[in-house]
Image 1: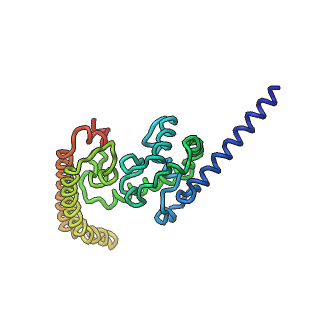
Image 2: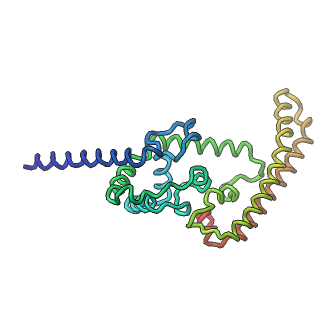
Image 3: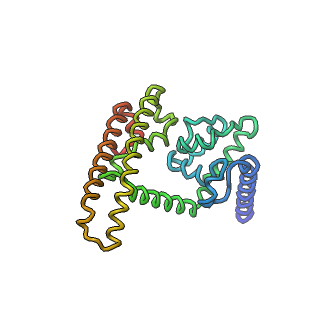
Length: 258
């Protein structure tokens, strides 16, 4: 009897899993990639792959039941303000259409459980971590600032990633002010970067040619001066941005500042 019950239970689980997978393929696969995307494929996608969606979901929403409820609610009532993906990615792909009337809520619950169980693939997580690591290293190499620390955030990037998030809750007035700060900051830093590139190239070439370091002291002084100016612009951006945001909004973006 026990063996029969165990067999029946296992068979039911297999049937449920198969049904859930079928629902995913039926309702989701036309837009969302089900396999792990390769880095070269990601720019060509018309919607985020499920690996990316569930990766961001698990990072943003804690607890499987809450994650499941989020999926069901979002699929039926999608909006940019609720998305767990970065706002700039939502702007790229657009907000998904509501699936109301196209899929039942109990089917969505099955889909959600299947997605949470099977995504993201471990290989995707490793790939994303490697990409983030490489991006961080590249940013550090090309940084025009004297101080490079997570405790001195780049608000222009942070805000674009969270621009339409309900949790941040930017008002239209705040957005207008922040865009002005962003424009001024990017303009100032871009100009400095353009000046730094040839100066740094001169220093590198001099060392490759085994020249005396004294031969590039002038360039080094100019580099130091430019990086000081860039750092001042960066700090002013932080000060101006935090003056526009409320303390609660700053805490959303920078919980480690508390």
